[in-house]
Image (cartoon, rainbow, N blue to C red; front, side, top):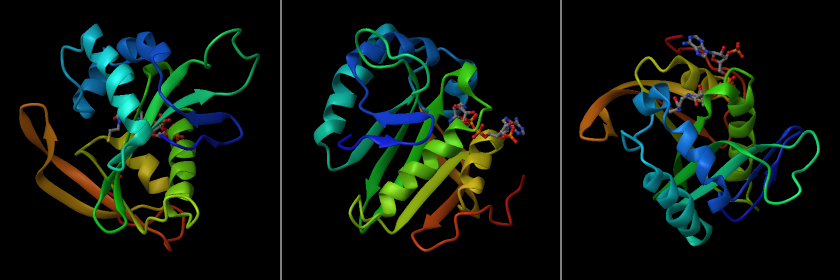
Length: 194
Ligand SMILES: CC(C)(COP(=O)(O)OP(=O)(O)OC[C@H]1O[C@@H](n2cnc3c(N)ncnc32)[C@H](O)[C@@H]1OP(=O)(O)O)[C@@H](O)C(=O)NCCC(=O)NCCS
């Protein structure tokens, strides 16, 4: 992650080792484990690898960008960053495309935060002075309505089900898939199975 992005209530910045406890706690959630291909059971060492190695690699990687999502309201902590509430990531694909992935800690869901975070990341992704991408690709496990609503509200166009399209630990799951092109309207598109 090279750039801090901001909205009225969120800051999207680097994941650090100070986030290990939060990542460990949030990745215990069964709902998250059902939709995100994190290790299960999720061990403390998995969180340490994520914050200490994966996130460090993200700072210089040309293959992916990773942002910690943090709430900015209220007084700042005396030391360290504000608490991580979730993450959002872009995994780059050839020729100006990237796949987006995200999760929030359970207590932070249903408050519009990921819709807001994705909007900001998409702005940066398409900005010619940002990542200058032309296409974002999203997919989720079939039936993950919350994730689909986040993509739909950001203008992603539903493209259907890819059978076995989602590698998920030791198996493949059917996936809903959608894309957002740089010049698409950023408003809910028709055609979603919601
Ligand atoms: C997917 C996820 C990131 C969405 O983030 P969020 O900030 O809660 O999303 P938002 O609040 O912006 O929007 C979600 C909407 O879906 C709705 N929703 C959530 N679960 C729902 C369900 N099972 N059925 C119908 N609507 C649902 C919410 O009420 C909200 O709509 P509202 O604003 O009208 O109330 C979050 O639910 C999450 O982390 N889930 C577990 C991990 C995951 O699935 N990640 C995505 C993998 S592709």
